[in-house]
Length: 476
Image (tube, rainbow, N blue to C red; front, side, top):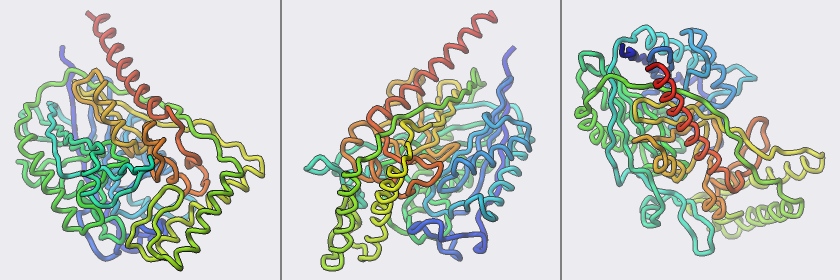
């Protein structure tokens, strides 16, 4: 007898009132309290296949930290009778959303997110009914570009100009993946869209907005008969941004609508079928870190940043320090505020080493893999660069495998070995902005870190599929 596949969906608004927003939580990524773009939402997709019960929460947020996601998953799990490991929280990474407050003080915005997520999950679980599944992919060019432009000296420039990024020839992931879930009468219950480009058309001083993922999913909901909710998943895009970058809210809306217009005919053409398999598993991999810099290296870094900041007063056009580049048009004070954490990190590291602090040699990477028929979704807690997603897709035994960023945590960029050697913001200096904060990766990833992740996910997929085949053979 065939195993029945059930699916249900729930949606709630999480757009905060102005009094719930703390704009001091990030020095640059602030929002305009009284301006709105695409509404922020949490969308819950509940799936059941035999003994497998899982729930996906797609949340319109820039990120959800490790301690926050633990509370969120536990609250949802308690409300709907699911184990925490059966819940995936997927942040859209929209750069036009407020940040969640620290947990050690009142956090009304995060409380709103938890409350609405629980309500959406309860609706999704209660709405589950017999379902059919299908997926397809269309390739989209001209919607994204790689921000890491190789330099003649072997380094890398962070490009804020999509024309320069496109001309560099650096990779993007053009796949726009479309999932369709119907009821047994082939009427849509829900959809899911995966695309690999930072939701960052605006970035600094933005309207409160779900950015292009919100415009994309809302347009699809409006276009499809029955108006089913669509969820969004962010593919591996640590070094890939949308076109344009540093634009306006209208650019974000235009991109979302363009992607929706690509996805709509694909969704309409998908022939949903009964599910053959739904497998889930989780694994944590230990990714190697570099050793702490020597006192001499730290002193050189401090000297370079101090000289750069002092020189700006006489030459405001300076942009390069420690292998990263400020935007040319930034005023002097913005350039100084951007590089000051590099100095502060080096000073804090000096003090920590002098006090005998021992730093970890590895950093945990949490991953959950869903295999739905021949579609693999690898939910990762970090922000892998695009090459990792492409490598996983190329070597996976499944017909389509996606590495989804910003799920069940908030680790920063994970580059491959070539990009580690190039250096730059994503590979080297991003960790300095946390200034050795507790629970945040203190050092850059070492060579081989990307291989540990990609190989580990591939092995997990192989183990899952082989175990399912062995169980099937044993039951015959």
